[in-house]
Image 1 (cartoon, one colour):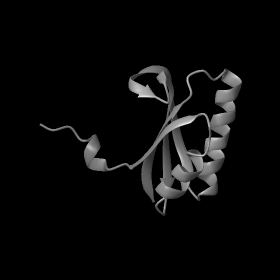
Image 2 (tube, rainbow, N blue to C red; image 1 turned 60 degrees about the horizontal axis):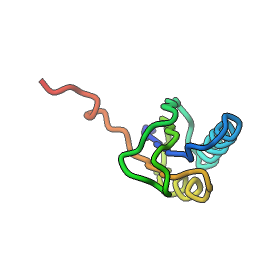
Image 3 (cartoon, one colour; image 1 turned 90 degrees about the vertical axis):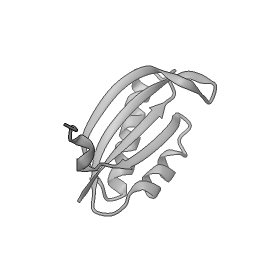
Image 4 (cartoon, helix red, strand yellow; image 1 turned 90 degrees about the horizontal axis):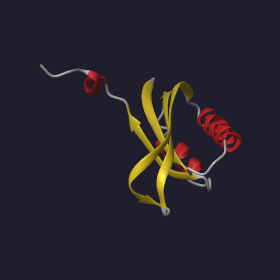
Length: 102
């Protein structure tokens, strides 16, 4: 089983109910692909370095997922169809990234 980081930027103008709906849809999409959710880090609304779909801010969600297969294409393709999802990035988590250099 490999760990992956699923990073999402959502529309910054969403209400708390709409954010909860999007999070539920994301969790269902991850489970439908055969992966399991390990953790969620919700960073909230942040300013972007450049505008995305004419928005200067975005609502950030960072998921940690575990999957035996490569879930990148299936999950990303499903989530990019949502109107409120601005960006999707799935990266395989590698243990050597977490070590500190002496």
